[in-house]
Image 1 (cartoon, one colour):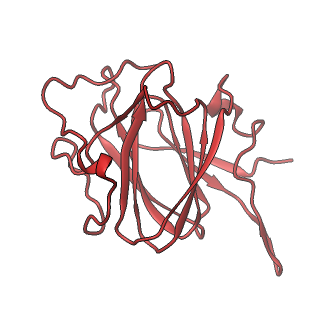
Image 2 (cartoon, helix red, strand yellow):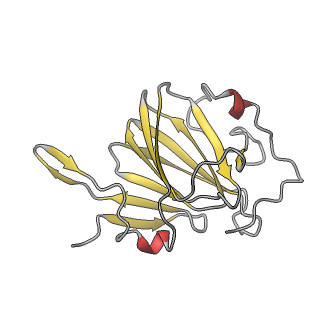
Image 3 (cartoon, helix red, strand yellow):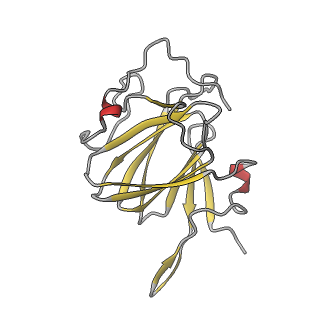
Length: 188
């Protein structure tokens, strides 16, 4: 059977856009969100450690920019299963030619896309439709000791959020801005 996924490169090394191919008929559709066999080339030897789901109610709300340090650095496959988000990944790998560059893409229940975010990237998103639901497939367990946050409005990164910034968590609002001492994280 042919793969139900098309894997596309983005301008940032290692960051990939995954297009899913739902099987549709007059009843609706069936959609595969992950398949170890079909995505073996991009996941390599990594295994799935957690699958998480979040719902964000308010349009304009921003979550992130979050990442985890080694040994809990994680690859994430992010999908929007209800609503729509503007999903953003920032390359924070110190040796990368795209260091501190960001890539953003619309993920929605309508466009059947996922963003595959490798280790060494910070991740965040902005909600474009109310009650948007996001599904995360992660290769490492969550660890509060290893988690870090970069401020989503950091001028050094200068993300062009599509809407005015809405609600953010206290932790995300108080996250530091990057200064010249931030050299990035080692590439995994």
